[in-house]
Image (cartoon, rainbow, N blue to C red):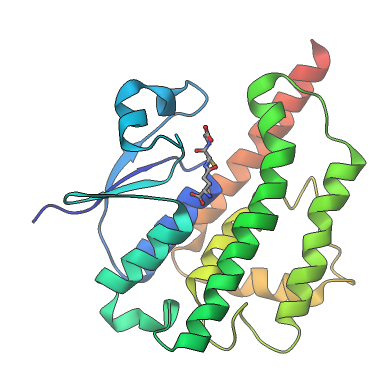
Length: 223
Ligand SMILES: N[C@@H](CCC(=O)N[C@@H](CS)C(=O)NCC(=O)O)C(=O)O
């Protein structure tokens, strides 16, 4: 059977969350890069696969699965037999992981996108203090979840940590995380960064996205 294929970009935080998950379960994916800045996600072929025109998009046999959170859960369930703690089977534990995945989807990544998208794609110069403060509100929420536990859902690493860390590390220079106010978030970031595959799979892409964002903002301001 052929291996699952992933449409992705290393610049894309949700794509990196899927790549972190695949590494954690030792799954080999066929990687199909998509250049969003060139509009490769808007071709008729890609729209046929995913009318929402987002990456990551996974093809596994006959199935097409979109949304990083859904993909991470699917991959652990199907291919991560030995790593089930990444997406626990226990109903309550799983509900907690799902809740943190929705936190990433509905708050963390949504706020990053609200700031980044107009600047990266539409020539905007709006990097207002309001948008930054709105992202930084999320640091308080994360600190709350991490108060008494090393990971977002308890003592075990889960896919919620992968999804959230990919987003947070993609925006934590324009929306800095105060180390004195948010020591637990800092410790969590450090913990995740210690994973042997972290830098290659997430760190480099996150740094590149932050640089491109800054360069694009400067370019738009100079126009
Ligand atoms: N909730 C989705 C968000 C995916 C998403 O917005 N990806 C961005 C790249 S980081 C994208 O594909 N943007 C292109 C578009 O929306 O047209 C997920 O987690 O996969």
